[in-house]
Length: 167
Image (cartoon, rainbow, N blue to C red; front, side, top):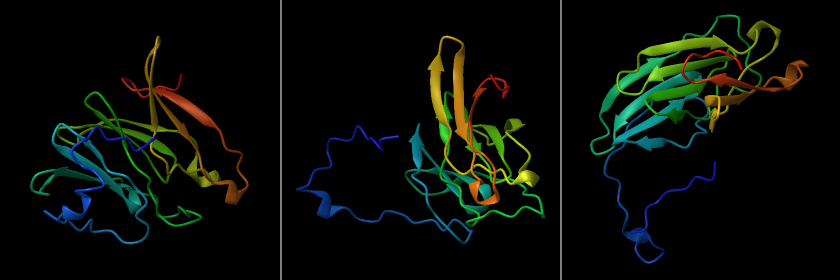
């Protein structure tokens, strides 16, 4: 949550020497409000319309891509934004515009589980990266809902990362 990096070799004195090594278009339009997450040589990026890209950090090559299918009748209030993914071990977590929480295998992009947070048709959605928390009960993903523009009352929920069950 603090956008921390352990990199110490980048300083105020040498930052001007940075150069673009690769660039990769996401293939989506609209908002791009995300901080990529890098783990094990892979950059995980979510985009608008709930797309996740796993990119090789050295080349920018796509290792896998996942596009979450959205209902045709969904009406996001402020555009199709997604604000990021989280990592818990070998699991990538993403909350979706249709108020779901997804878990994907970080190596293959295969869906591990897909859980409804709340009924999107009632105005609920989720756009923020889940917060991962290790507790005595196991590793949890905490998510909040959006949708106040449609008169819903927001809340936070916690889900077991291993099973996708609400705790």
